[in-house]
Length: 132
Image (cartoon, rainbow, N blue to C red; front, top):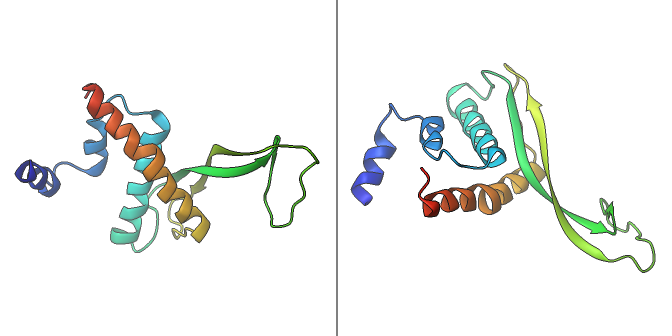
């Protein structure tokens, strides 16, 4: 297994998007988020920190809710008797072509969450289902 991993990892004909495409049944959001992260990496490592095309930078975002209202700042009051819960939504922004790629600390936390909680489990699901 280790030998096969190294062969695939070192094969320059297999770009990251091509490797990801091998997981045909992967969830659309997980696929698009992963492709965006590959584009950001390529810009930072090979394009002097500039996007070579528009990047739809996507991530999952956890949020604290008081009833249906998101708590967005420290000290924000919730209505009396309203329950608290954790929710998640999908967020995105466009990094325009030829612009400098800049990612804030909060976005990096969301990216880590997205990789751990959305992309990796989705890849495992596809592998375990044997549909690739």
